[in-house]
Length: 277
Image (cartoon, rainbow, N blue to C red):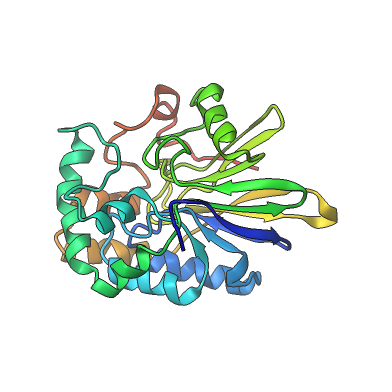
């Protein structure tokens, strides 16, 4: 498979579950898999927007769980840089920033924790997915079509988003990377970020997010959902493995260590519980 080109999944039907950023948080991933089983939504209708590997303590087990689950997944910037043998996470953090400094602890841990087999499997993942659903053309990407590590938020100007719609030809974009769930719908296009499951959304709660798509009566609809999991265990494992304590605390408090990557509009929302339809 040429993972430089979007992998076409053809036409999909039935409910789809979309999630982002497991971030090596096995406890959150296991909880989401249980939710999917209860709904029930089969693995073929589940999509991960990348960054399977990240801040938390169980990168190898998390990769192997995603692989065994059999869901569709794309590479995030973390996977891309691990595959390339880079010495940083590729998260587009400003050099010397707090995020950059903290990544120098968790990223090497992730690299040395992964087996050669897991890295080889990650290298088979595409950078984008495309499919048709409820009469819409859909593209799944990590950051933006312009760059895998570009941050796109709710407040990001629409012309920036338009560049990705133009590049992909999609009516609907499903994205990840930013860590915050949101929808921006206008001009016949819809940008949906499912959020991530590996870290809370900076809203003062420990809950994490996923997205459901529905094609009932042939109409495209979506809904955002939250869940909680054994964040205490995930926190303890991070501390036991010498990972940044501030990120471990975020699993409990729901507050990010810093807001360096956020636009002013999103910074102002720190600690406020998110409400999305």
